[in-house]
Image 1 (spheres, rainbow, N blue to C red):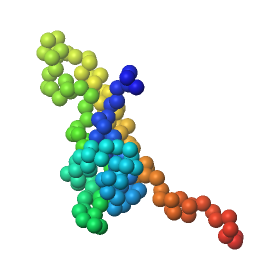
Image 2 (image 1 turned 45 degrees about the vertical axis):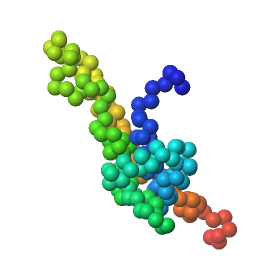
Image 3 (image 1 turned 90 degrees about the horizontal axis):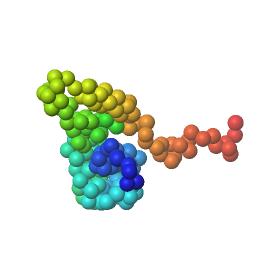
Image 4 (image 1 turned 90 degrees about the vertical axis):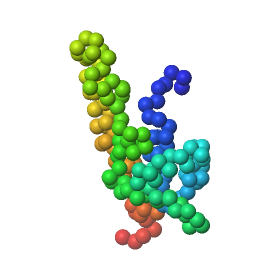
Length: 153
């Protein structure tokens, strides 16, 4: 994996995984999420605090505490979660400047246009993936979808 460059930050990926886990296990807690997803507990707690701050989950303290979704999964996309955790997604910092260094030097920059196009394509793909479609159905709901071979017709 030395020659692989991961596009997402760990906390962005962890946030998506945590939201899916919370949707599948309402009322779960940070320690259990970290254990089930094989993630460092302290880092998972940090990610969950970001999700609370973004209004995507709520955290309840105490004996009956845990975390629960505040946002509807149907309204969450991969892009909305990434941006809730880390801010607006762009590929290169030159996209944030009215004129990049090459534009200042040469008057035009084809690379900046390429960065905008690539950013737009990635944003569209991530925005097109709803978390609702990624949640595994609860075991009992999945079993209800299967016909019962012992039931009479």
